[in-house]
Length: 311
Image (cartoon, rainbow, N blue to C red; front, side, top):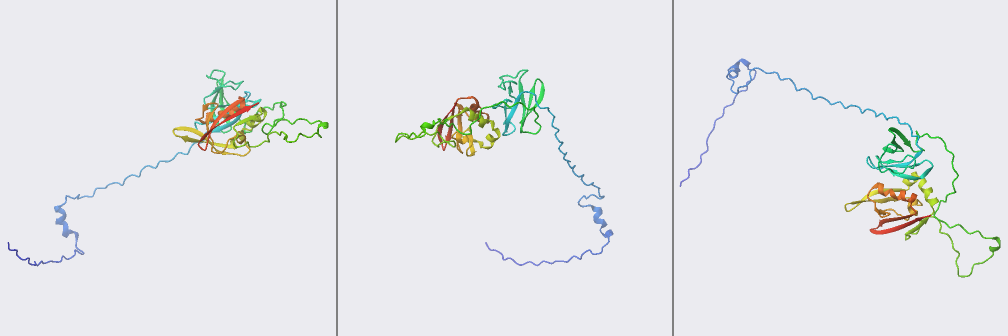
């Protein structure tokens, strides 16, 4: 089919003169037509009201309830706080500080023996709050404060100090035999070495059985603040099970003398699995009263059993 050639079209343009300095009356006809249905009279729209500013109330100072110190013959050896729901109080009789029992909030114990009560009764002492160096207890319907002896606010009458045997500061060392003057010059048979007691200090790395004097163990347990500073225990996961690991152990501490090392994980104490802070502290309770203690740990992925004998 034939295609016609495109021709160039011509277009004309006219210029519109600007409406400069024209009076408004000239455009009145356009305004009256109101092509766009515009509002003829301006409607006043009030500005939006500013959003109310919330004034933060200053926190009111909590007024601590003044609670009088208890007159019961009990003592607070120490407190351990691992969070709101993980606080522990070490409570003992005043005349037997190294025989403490570990209690949590809500536990009850006998006011004379400081032994745990299975059920709270009218004469029981109930632990209400555990704070740093202070425990609030309830006895016979009255709140009482139990302070650590060195804490501010603790007041107690001085008691006569009973004479106690001198305590050793080391591991068991056999008492040296007295040598008579006439025997000093005697020589031991050749080839026989002189027996010597085990020197105090950190035991051998491969040692698994330990013997301690009760008097030495009691002395270590009395230094409760020192026990807390000499080691740091942190929770660790093995699968879905929680255990506790020694993150830090101070040299020459009781933990070292028990054969423990940094990164050791506590698995069992006397056959009971250790999966909570309370159970981890059972080792300290066992040292107070038990004569034989078994401890199972994990070191570098291998289980190790320790045996302790306290005489």
